[in-house]
Image (tube, rainbow, N blue to C red):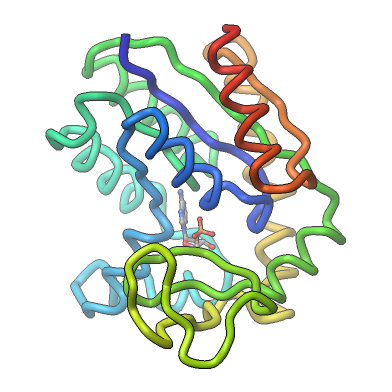
Length: 217
Ligand code: AMP
């Protein structure tokens, strides 16, 4: 049976890092609405131009826009083996949009992985985060040296700081998470198999625990 997974939690808790690892391990498509939006902003598409200011200031892009991205992407061939949704849904409305999309696709078992960490941990991680401008791989600033080669795509000196990983914007994103996104968790309590994992552990320990819990269920 294919797997449909939502990875949930505050910005910087490790959703992107874990989603990539789990997706490659389980042969699932990794769908990050944040990555898709940043790519659209970089390419100055119509959607990118609309989203740019919102994304860079830490607000939420309108539900219809992200809902449209997800609907289109989940219909692609690459998602047929299952997928892991990273950064969506972030509002109750988006959760409802997703339920509708999933009911029109093959109805598989839905998992929700919630990564937990205190705000202080998150603020420190986000302030030290760099991303590969070519493949969106995520690393800590302290691990990136001069003429650094991306371990994921091989690009040289490609690591940049995300515009929204600035101190003020980080605060805003956390506020948005607590006010608008965190309540979405309740929506899934009786709709998905919920797995909670301590996101402050080492990366490989988080992955291990997720994989173990996915198999148990
Ligand atoms: P992320 O890479 O998931 O941290 O997303 C970066 C930014 O993209 C967010 O702070 C939002 O501005 C925007 N974004 C990503 N996913 C969504 C979503 N599901 N709903 C609204 N905005 C989103």
